[in-house]
Length: 318
Image (cartoon, rainbow, N blue to C red; front, side):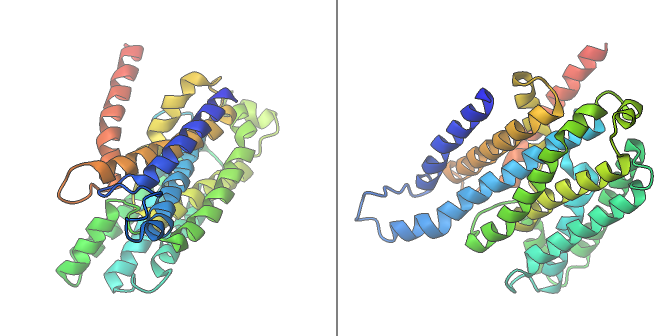
């Protein structure tokens, strides 16, 4: 509880600061700044809220996935849901339909839904974790291949540039419409993941022990797929590919919990929201010719973190 309160307090402090920060700092009390209120209300506030929403979804999804697979290296992208959602969005850019309102988010969500259904159909018959993981890897590989094919067959350089830029991940230039898409879907997904927390605790004892405690493997598969699919699909729909959040955040907060998946879900969601909010604010403040993409910034953090995690695990196994 103290950890959750500390994270909430940190978000409450960083959020208003993120509204003021940027290439041009805004003083809301300075009436001489033209259109300050409009910039805050229509540009920076929805962007900050999207950072919180996307980060919370990815953080909670990472904690749930690591608990389900009992693998500290698990990441939501492993399921194939994020690559499939990305392919859905890329398809709209490829066909030149992305400018139509809500088409790109709808296509991303359709891609996520298709991956969810395929994953549950393949792995849901037995509920085995090994089959679930392999099915996710297969879907991720297929979606990644189709995305590469769309890039290679892109009808013009402009479309190629749009696709590549979108895949880098960012929440710049987003509006309240994007918040309206991401917020309810992410909230629904997080509620599903939170409710299955005790089932993930039972799974830590082993699949057979969990079954003896009344955990229904097939039902748990559908629940985990639905929860992950909603939060990851919503995040990809509005922000593109934002990686490593689901991997890093659970490891950062786990030492401050009792290490049970049920007690890790909420802190991971809050820490994910804080991490993406801070990262997006930093992207705006860096003195670069053009703004650093959020997905690239988090990858620059995540890759060394992942390497350090691998080295630590190697030392523990030695």
